[in-house]
Length: 175
Image 1 (tube, rainbow, N blue to C red):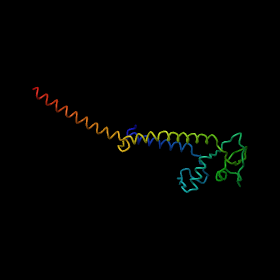
Image 2 (cartoon, rainbow, N blue to C red):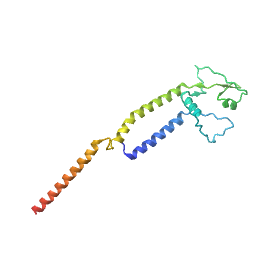
Image 3 (spheres, rainbow, N blue to C red):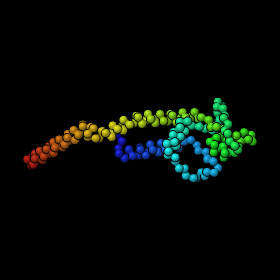
Image 4 (cartoon, helix red, strand yellow):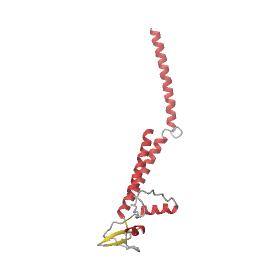
């Protein structure tokens, strides 16, 4: 059972851990030349934005090349890096030519994300009953034994007081 002060510390530590995991697993944002890196990013909280972010979490894409996956060229008018990035393509320099290709599916990143998600789910499902029992254990309506223990303590205290009174009377009689 955790003391109340450490409960808040654990909650803060879990939140910090979740934020770090989220920033670690976030897809790298490729910014075009027109955007400033210091410009604040306003989150899109529409249903479409949430769906797209959920889809991008479970379908991670990367520009890293793999020998097994073929390169699919992007249809870009001009062959420069900014146009390639605006169309969500990956720029690749072959010799002197700059070619744009579609990002490929990142199976390693997907496996890491799924392992962390299932591990976190099992951790939450494992710790939830323990935390609920620890919190509800102190409740007198859930734990009737605790109410009885208060009565037993009161009876024991009354008996102790009676013994002390009788001991004081015996001491006075012996004097």
